[in-house]
Image (cartoon, rainbow, N blue to C red):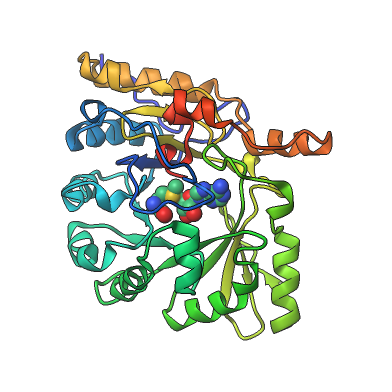
Length: 349
Ligand code: SAM
């Protein structure tokens, strides 16, 4: 009998499995204060990192259960050697209709063309500031010019739909929203402002540093006039808006306006641990069965059963804690040292 191919598995809230974020390394070449503020980190073991063949195999199984969007992330994905080879392999998986990457852009200028040629569809570059001195203070590296060169290389390489992701933090960059909207327009990109999240890694998070979606919208309306929401059917985390002159931008308001209800995302770490929520404390080990020779059907059953039991609504639960005055740093540094999987730079954001 032909194996039962389950398509479109749903979780306990009826949410489909559509988006898979694949972290290809936990290493990063920046040390952003809101993500990797510590001096020392516990890294994943190199021998535990999935090979490209293993990643491809898992992605194929995920697509049989409904995944059609794959985003490469990290750590910094461009630190993974020969990344275009992986892109080429994933681009051949027929069900993957959207193959994207999130990068800090530092190494993008040298790799954009190779990634495009390999079949990458879209690029998102994280850009928190347009000021080199701020960039240095925020990331503790001197690479701002390289990031801008990376952004400039995206269009000539043949990509369209460039996005710029900005984490907005009070006292750091909340005065740059307008500059970033203007900059994005100039490079034919759409900027998305992200509320500062109390995720693993953000060991200095505090509620007063969060610039809310409402504040951001007010700031932009004060400058540009009425901001119009763009109504669209989408499970994307960003809500999109239009300024009177037609410029569009997005806001990802996971902290003040969680969107767990439509969340169809899950995350695969570079060592093959599968997380069903950005805030989840535990993941499903897919590497061990994969390396122990599990068949495709067995892997599919494992993933299907994990997703069909999914009850996670991490961002909403964080918000509920706020209502009773108990919202703070998600995981203290000792916990992160014991299990690096809890880190944002391991999960890929
Ligand atoms: N290195 C790549 C990059 O910089 O885009 C990919 C990995 S990074 C962890 C993915 C995204 O997570 C980045 O846009 C980063 O700004 C975001 N991020 C990390 N910590 C965050 C936090 N505490 N709140 C909101 N976004 C965060």
